[in-house]
Image 1 (cartoon, helix red, strand yellow):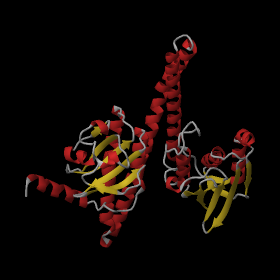
Image 2 (cartoon, rainbow, N blue to C red):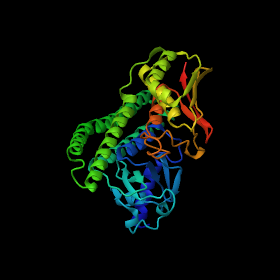
Image 3 (cartoon, rainbow, N blue to C red):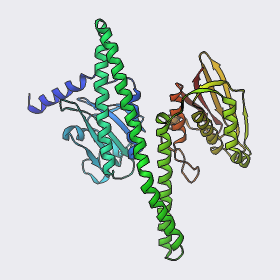
Image 4 (cartoon, rainbow, N blue to C red):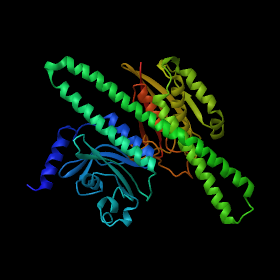
Length: 410
């Protein structure tokens, strides 16, 4: 065998020892992919493992495929070079112009990948972000991707050790002790990811606030004093800074769901709903919305987050309305050991092919000119429901309305 063949055989052995291929989705890996997309502001992010003939996606955001051939796409470049690979515009890179992932779905224009390297030094996978437009990453975003890549390896090591102990019945006590350590390590790792998102967005607030303030001051002083092009450029700059402030505030809200939540207490959900409707009083009156509701139970919940959950779902039902007054019903049923809440509307509805996307952060189905917002409300709803050990989903027909369901243990 050649040196290359020997190396590849050893690399594959390093991959197979983790027994990760073709396994079910796991929250820890999904969180890392989601945070990579958030941090780099890209619609697509994934963690994929490369064996001898394919690339298998363990976690993904913004993709509806589970694997592709080894020689398609650009992740193999990370494996071969064992270093970060960034392609700012695939149309201008001769390695990429004829690649199927550029010509066809998912129509990649930008790619950034970080190799996942084992402690023995073998690259077995990549953490990647992609976009459908050309772009660049800041140095801090590249550093962040490298940090997240190390988190993936840490998760793999913890997972491997956990499986090793769990399969040995004779070492049950040792397995239980390890499981506790592994869970603490995973909890610490996930807490670090939450904190990382919080710190990144928090630290960006002050410099961006200063930029926005000076741009607004510039606009007030010099608007209509320069030529038309200058006025237009000033308007673009002010609008861009304002939108970035909104995105950062939304990212802070998203990261705070898990890291800054309040303790659960027994709360009358009817009171929470009435407070929410009072907050939405003006938009309800303006749109002539008719809102009805069942008698709701008392539950152990985070009162503030539950109010935000109601407000996000009801606000969406009002926002995505047809040319008729919105009709919204908040219902609830007890099934076994859980309560199933529903928020039903008569709005525009959602096409089935988009239903999986709506809970992904920063994913929008409509243009900003048609509906305002940044595509984060439902992602926050999902995070709140998951913190309450429930699940959330939607049933919808285009032109007939939607019903959002979520569960809460009784």
